[in-house]
Image (cartoon, rainbow, N blue to C red):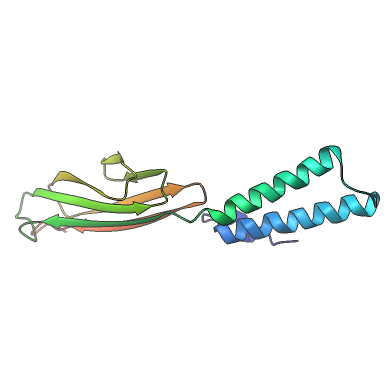
Length: 147
């Protein structure tokens, strides 16, 4: 049987580890059921095996989300006291995209941007989430004299 730590550890499970775990569970279910009743599966046992197969196939076909984030500022660095900057992101395979530092949820499209006012040097983190995991990216806006 698969190692549970590979899937339930502190970070997001990878698609491959989830698929491998489901495959090992499916194999074990089939062994247990067939060991006790060496006949064709039927009823709930057959339904459970078919559902595991569907889940395994669906997860194997869904790619992980990706995200990139960059900050454009002019001048670079911004003058003391801050100024306008633009955060630009691109994502793939994401259902949601959010940016911290009070920016919030943004469109999980192939790309987008938002104009912001930054008073002090700030690092922004974008997180893209999809059905099989998440991805993050960071960009820093630099303000002169304030790190």
